[in-house]
Picture 1 (tube, rainbow, N blue to C red):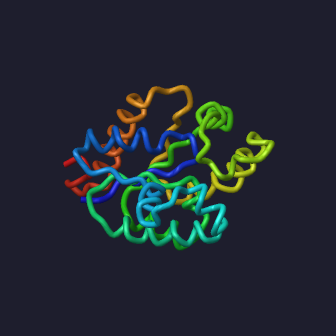
Picture 2: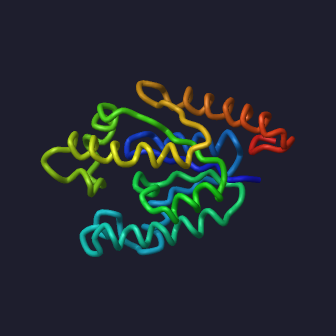
Length: 181
């Protein structure tokens, strides 16, 4: 059984939707950032503070390499997982990739009180999120089998759309076996 991998910016709902999707598919759920924290015994902001973004991205790559070798799980990735080409290759090979797309406005609303976002610690979160989206949106699209909009939509509706689109994708591929069979 193939993995179902969620990519997208912070605040897109990857963890929330991923947990719900995993329950519907009766598959285990993994969050790559949580896996990194478990492996290191430190939270993401601490890793950024001590090792910088470069150190964090190395840890992220190792976690993705291990997780993408699994079969039959729902995986929520960090927002910057697509920055490295070798990560994009892992994601493409690791299963069906779903890009949860959301606007900068929605990201601001969803991340406003979250203190575990190292990239948003500065004085201009909107500017940071806009810059990140400009760079990352084409990368998310380059790995995605499916793009789903999450703005102003309850997670349950997003999950239903993902399930429908996974079924349609499986039918188009004519494999007879999909993540839903």
